[in-house]
Amino acid sequence: MIAASMRRVSALFDPWSLLLAALTIGVFGYGVVFVPNFFTAFNLSQLTAGVAEKALLALPMVLLIVAREIDLSVASTLALTSVVLGILLKAGLPIPAAIPLVIAIGALLGAFNGTMVAFLGLPSLVVTLGTMAMYRGIGYILLGSGSINVFPESLTDFGIDDIPGTRIPLVITPFLILAPIFAVALQRMPFGRRIYAIGGNPPAALYSGIDVRRMRFRLFVISGMVCAVAGIVYTARLANARANNALGMELDVITMVLLGGVSVWGGKGNLTGVLWALVLIATLRNILGISQIGGDAQGLVIGLLLIGSLLVSNSTGFLVSWLRNIGAPVKASG
Image (cartoon, rainbow, N blue to C red; front, side, top):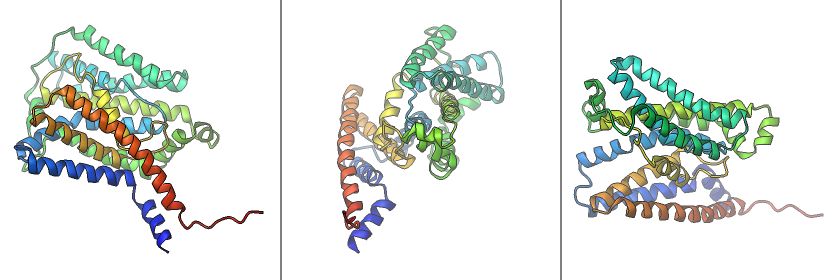
């Protein structure tokens, strides 16, 4: 009976998400107790605003990696759409017209990646490594090394204001809207089950009637659209549009997704763990920043955390398998 209970508990709860939650709460608690000025409304608001774009980029990245694909061009797509938004607004296009146009351009950039991967059969790692440089290069062609820093007041207000009556920054609202949609789509709908099937065994998914190529194409289009939303948020938050925006951000996003328990081999993972990883990394970087520890040292800490998490994750997988197999009926041989 005890063995059966242990198996039920391990089936109900994702051990890795629970471990991440405990680690995140521990790091946050350390900041509250030992780091001056960490637990203040201003600092927590800045922490939340600073992670808004990465949180958005992590959403489609989860879907792609679960489907055994990857998009290394997410930060470059963000930068290019930021440049396009700046140019459109500088030319006098009103915001209600500029934003849908920028999202449509993001969809086209994602569709280019999707066409190369899904219909021409090229590896997503190679394709998006190329478009990572290409999209940022287009940004430099359009704007050069300069930047656009003058925007309509309504956009800059969105970048600096809070949700009325709270200290929650407005720039996090696109993520708060999209995250539940992605979570439900991935973990509760046929759309998500198809993604898991493609990532777990692509040939079997194809033979079961799933249009694998179309699904992959759609995932890249979704990635491009969400990257465009992140580009709008980034531009509003920093009041700046330039081709080198979000340089290197794709590495942070991939780290969050893998740390969140999404398997690099596809077919496994969920958004719950990734959200805990997002909060953990954001909190850790904030604490290190307040403690006057620079970006290089922060990168070292995050890298060690990712490597350590992969080692622990493997050990946890063996432990969970053992718990689930305890007391399982033994098949009679012969």
